[in-house]
Image (cartoon, rainbow, N blue to C red; front, side):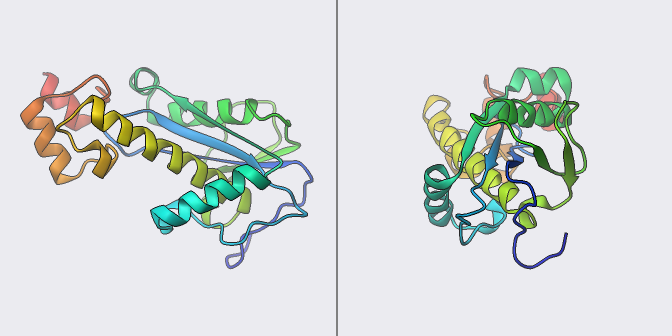
Amino acid sequence: MGRGNLEQTAFNLAAGTDEVGRGPLAGDVVAAAVILDPAQPIAGLADSKTLSHARRLQLAATIENEARAFSVARASVEEIDSLNILAASLLAMQRAVEALSLQPEFVYVDGQYCPTWHYRSQAVVGGDGRVAAIAAASILAKVRRDAEMVELDGRYPGYGFARHKGYPTAAHLQALRRLGPCAIHRRSFAPVAALLR
């Protein structure tokens, strides 16, 4: 798959799936799956990390209105801690694909690995910058997870979740040392585990 314009797929019912939230110390890992309409390509799709917050919101609304199917799923903090973050990310993507109202002929998965499932699929490294359906999934997952972290900031004040979304910024690490872990911190991640010894 070449760089440049994001690829539309050769399959009529091809899904793309991606997750957001592998790196944070807190919160669920959230995945989305999207089947785009080949007759209605969406302009401006790109890796969600490269887009402004406002542009992500605009594109998310367009995706939800124009995609043939989309879904959002997750793996919980407890599942991350019991399985490991890679396995939990694959589980979240599997749940997202299985929740689609139309079941795909083929699934493009962002990253190096595909979940263990019955779908014909291909892992695409850097897929959120290469395959349109994966880019769309990355946008939906990031918009959903960011909104949830803003909401959790009100439930667990002092950590700054609305700003850093759970990622290990200096401010988050300082708050974690000051306040200790809260219910949504991942106990298996080293900076959190160190405070529980």
